[in-house]
Amino acid sequence: MKAINYYLNFPGNNEEAFNFYKSVFGGEFVGLTRFKDTPEGAKLSAGDKEKLMHVSLPIGNANVLMGTDAIESMGHRITYGNNFHLSIETDSKEEAAKYFNSLSAGGKITVPLADTFWGAYFGMLNDKFGIQWMVNYSYPKQ
Image (cartoon, rainbow, N blue to C red; front, side, top):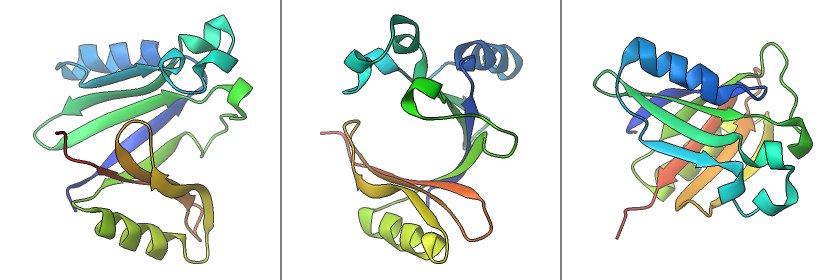
């Protein structure tokens, strides 16, 4: 396993929050994708198109703070306790499947493990204790 990182969900103010975290921790964003740049972007309101689907801010030597705007027009609602995930970055697709299948036993799969438009093998689940997980394997860039 490469790393376990925090993934934060925000009710529309992700960009403001991450600009604050950047001012605190320093560094530069290594990934920033707006909803308008996704396959579902055309279906969203002008305001929601500008919200952040994903942002990554490296912190320290091996940690990455990541976040998204969990927008209601896409069926998301932020409540206390569902505003974060533990995100596992694996070394292989097989390792991703192993962790995903093990963690989801007795729990609930919220996004099935599958290839994504951003070049990863990715899935989301709530384990049997209610902890939210993301499992990701990033395909090597060619």
